[in-house]
Amino acid sequence: MANITRWDPFRLEPFDDAIDNLFKGFMVRPFSMGTESPQIKLDVKEDDKAYTVHADIPGVKKEDIHVTIDGNRVSLSAEVRKEKEEKKGETILRSERCFGKVYRAFSLGQEVDEEAAHAKYSDGVLELTLPKKAPVESKRLTIE
Image 1 (spheres, helix red, strand yellow):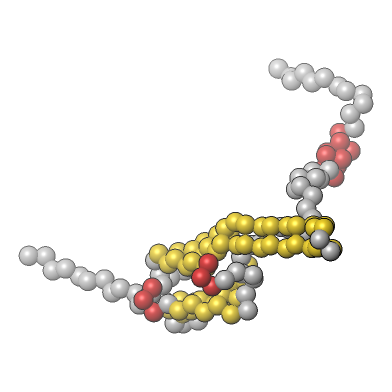
Image 2 (cartoon, helix red, strand yellow; image 1 turned 120 degrees about the vertical axis):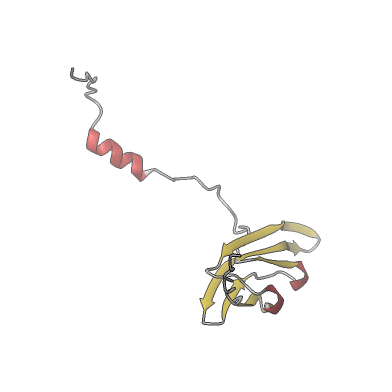
């Protein structure tokens, strides 16, 4: 049995989809005044012995950065506090504050040796040196 469909003379099939896609995502994000919350940007490099991670976390004190290593999973978090105040005389024209926590986690191809890992923070860039854990040789059991 054939499917019956209703024909709409005002719907132009190929053009309606194009118009829908044109406005898809329009005004999804709220308008901001340049006070977007920061995100952690990463560069990860690998050699035979270790992984090297460069994470951009500008404007954060090193005491507010936390790094957690669990096997091959690395987690970075930081407390962000930004205050900006513009004054003209004694009248405050504009006051902006940004408080919060940023978080980023990723998995590496091999487990990391947590004891030998090293972190350094300078000029808004966190550098992690994550040595690879030596693979554990499997032990063959003799059957008695």
